[in-house]
Length: 91
Image (tube, rainbow, N blue to C red):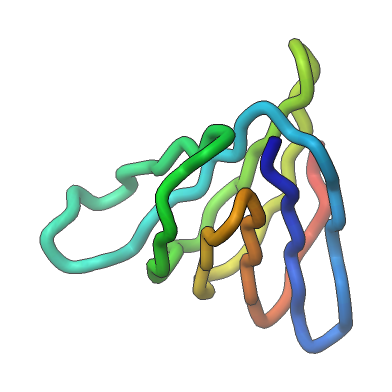
């Protein structure tokens, strides 16, 4: 089950463990504007630029979200780390 950490210059904004799904919008050449990546347990390692978006995550049927500006996302060993300049809790 993946863990999620959203980090900014303010420190750790979100730290959640044992999630079922994490959804992040990518911002990279060669991908449609606004395309999203759903990260599930066992996801392959990944490093990508992210766009300004609502990062969403769920445990069971309950969803949460955090609005973030563009940043960088790393997926490795069932851990998702998103580094951004600032963020705002919305859901």
